[in-house]
Image 1: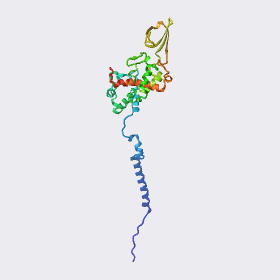
Image 2 (image 1 turned 90 degrees about the vertical axis):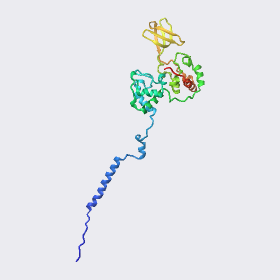
Image 3 (image 1 turned 60 degrees about the vertical axis):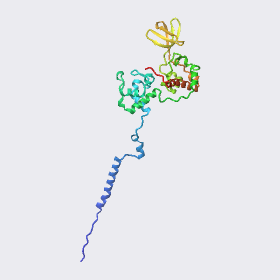
Image 4 (image 1 turned 120 degrees about the vertical axis):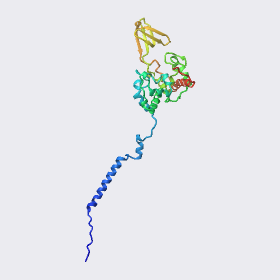
Length: 294
């Protein structure tokens, strides 16, 4: 008598489901990896701006802050506008310490219409200070490369600067006093002002040529003017107070009073020397500890 052995039957249905289940699990796992892990290689992650460590704010950032926050009142060059004063060249501003300026930035000057900017934070205020200092010609000035002794000779001689400008109490009086000019202007700016005087604000349209009804002619700088009279400083230093009713013609020259031929009259080395001399005057005064009266 034979005993029937149990027979095990295998069907392909459960086995066929295994690969599909594994595939689904693989897809789900891959999706989770893509969603929850950062994309890209570790090198790519390091290149991301968000992953960079904190760094100091550059002067260019300070310019952006200035343009958006300060320029509407103080002007893009910081030299004042209709609503706020010059903060680039005024000695009472440029002589203030960094801490003084930062204090003003934070607290503002409410009585004069300047709001506080403490909300910008320390980093942005420091960047703003750096940019304001650059507008004042500090911290970014080019090194002095010219021969200052040669520049002094040119100033009092061939260049003729002393005929119109004064330094340390000596020289002419038709143009601005240049004793402190180098404090607020870099050597590059001084060089540019010599070669292109027409670019300097306030140097155009003030030189007048007048013809009186009696035939006399006058030429010089207009110092004061109202509806009825005009005060003229002639090139020889004489002041003329003239009634407009006595004048037949008034012509204002549009070119700068300062000669425009220095670029051809002086060599590049001469221009460097002259700029270096003007910069050195202010730096020498600073080293001597000269105080400015506020």
